[in-house]
Image (cartoon, rainbow, N blue to C red; front, side):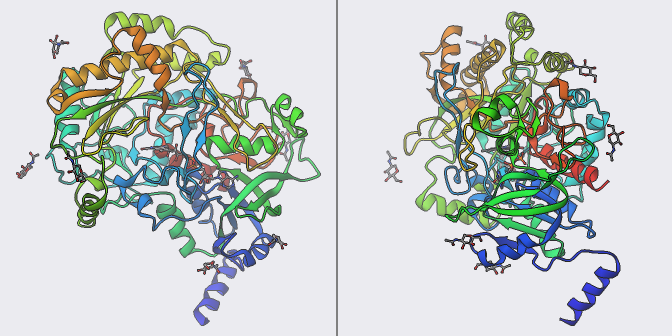
Length: 620
Ligand SMILES: Cc1cc2nc3c(=O)[nH]c(=O)nc-3n(C[C@H](O)[C@H](O)[C@H](O)COP(=O)(O)OP(=O)(O)OC[C@H]3O[C@@H](n4cnc5c(N)ncnc54)[C@H](O)[C@@H]3O)c2cc1C
Ligand SMILES: *[C@@H]1O[C@H](CO)[C@@H](O)[C@H](O)[C@H]1NC(C)=O
Ligand SMILES: *[C@@H]1O[C@H](CO)[C@@H](O)[C@H](O)[C@H]1NC(C)=O
Ligand SMILES: *[C@@H]1O[C@H](CO)[C@@H](O)[C@H](O)[C@H]1NC(C)=O
Ligand SMILES: *[C@@H]1O[C@H](CO)[C@@H](O)[C@H](O)[C@H]1NC(C)=O
Ligand SMILES: *[C@@H]1O[C@H](CO)[C@@H](O)[C@H](O)[C@H]1NC(C)=O
Ligand SMILES: *[C@@H]1O[C@H](CO)[C@@H](O)[C@H](O)[C@H]1NC(C)=O
Ligand SMILES: *[C@@H]1O[C@H](CO)[C@@H](O)[C@H](O)[C@H]1NC(C)=O
């Protein structure tokens, strides 16, 4: 007690703020503390303790003259093995830590609704993802800088923020004895997020997929973090050298909570809207805080107040939902729902871009180890191996390939694609299309190929058989979808129209990518591992058959962005380059919804970089 008082006196002397109630408070488990939590005033409220939001809240709390409330609908899952063990990624799909959204029936994909998992926990989707750590191509960041008219978002200027978040470990030994090179100059070594390479590499990945692509003439890219992704590579992973998954929970928030008393992490609490002050500031609306509900059955609307800023980090799906519920959005969408428009901002929820994916499935010859049918004794053995630092559960993805059109299309196909990408579309802003063409010219990859160590199809494999799934994921969709509310009930998910295959270039690239992966399976070093093709199956052969199969198979690589784009206001922008929502005095967005155009990467690295940069912007 005495040392506590001494510390408090010291903090007071330096202008530090200590909150009476601080640390983790769960709106259900600690319901009696909630009134006191909400009676406290905060400098900043961060809505959504996901990949970006939890990292941002932790950084903001480093300024001990400020107080921070982080509001998260889920709870901490640090001790959930489905989260912490890399090879168990995917096992938490459809569980309580998954929002389990679905798209609307897709007009160009045979009317199917597509399942969209998203993380509902502290750490958000960083706790549900497949751990791959990549950054994309510098031309994509230069596009983001151009579209936001701010050079501070260029590759060169953002790189320090990637490094600030990262603690990179040199690759250690691995089961296939492959040499994994890297470029030390692009990695950080003292940030919160441990990035390392899994010790286990499947032989069908190394001798099959990786070598097979090399045989097809694809170059080896030593490091997918260097801003020049091109070729087949060994992928780094957000896991510690002890193979524990890194999320913005264990990397950022948990250490911040134990170090500081100016931070409250309110879990099982869902923000329902931003509340507004009666008076405007200089013509802009001023947020006073948020409304929220505990996620259990008590739906009484509660209020939290922010003296300085409200920051939305609810992700690409729920950030536009919250803006619209708060009256910020396209008035022609808000008015029919009876929501009065606070700021008419048509870009909210527009401009949705995903990485659409197709997945081929090949049955392996007997004897290869995969995650298929991992249950019972085999699972127990795998968990024991994991505890000893080895085996298949220490990895999730280990090799990825990012290819330009030249690297996988025939010359005739390249010519055809060059025509298709010029086709205008009403949904695609001309400025974005122009940027995407510049990216292609600059050598940015258009497709990603990745092998998955199990039957990753719509149906399950046959027991006792093992499979390799080969995904092709479009990196720069020319289609543009939307995410809008369809009701004023904040507990009803918004309508997600992914607009898959809206633009003909998308269908073309994915179908030709499918053909290429088939070729890899039947005529490369991969062939010696493969017994037969389950999906789509050899009856799909002609270009027309591939295209129609793609319509029935297209799904998500789980990378939606763009629904609160950082662009000029007259170019469907929602936030300016300081992440401030147009027409508001003190509301920002910090999550992947701000990307005006996509990057050719698994984007969690960028969510961390955005958090780091946002903290600098906010704290000045
Ligand atoms: C299955 C899957 C696999 C993936 N694989 C990879 C990969 O291997 N590598 C990679 O780099 N990326 C991967 N990604 C993508 C990456 O994880 C996400 O793009 C990224 O984590 C998104 O970060 P975010 O901060 O924008 O949103 P999120 O991390 O989704 O955070 C949003 C948070 O807000 C909370 N929230 C939402 N609404 C409210 C509300 N109203 N009130 C309170 N809280 C709210 C949510 O619960 C969530 O915690 C994958 C994603 C998924 C889903
Ligand atoms: C919240 O409730 C949990 C479970 O009852 C308890 O362990 C924890 O100490 C409580 N937290 C606080 C801040 O009182
Ligand atoms: C890797 O190297 C070790 C030690 O030389 C050897 O025993 C093992 O067979 C090698 N593994 C592969 C897959 O080549
Ligand atoms: C008010 O807006 C004007 C014009 O946009 C700007 O020059 C001024 O700095 C603003 N004042 C404040 C207090 O933000
Ligand atoms: C619901 O929460 C409110 C606000 O905390 C409280 O006043 C009310 O008693 C609660 N209702 C029930 C049924 O627990
Ligand atoms: C399949 O696996 C089950 C459970 O491990 C086992 O009992 C059965 O014999 C196996 N069948 C074949 C054909 O290998
Ligand atoms: C298989 O690949 C080789 C080169 O790797 C090529 O020469 C041959 O034509 C291919 N065969 C088929 C059937 O495509
Ligand atoms: C938007 O405004 C900027 C100047 O502020 C201008 O350069 C740009 O051309 C405008 N874009 C459109 C689509 O009108």
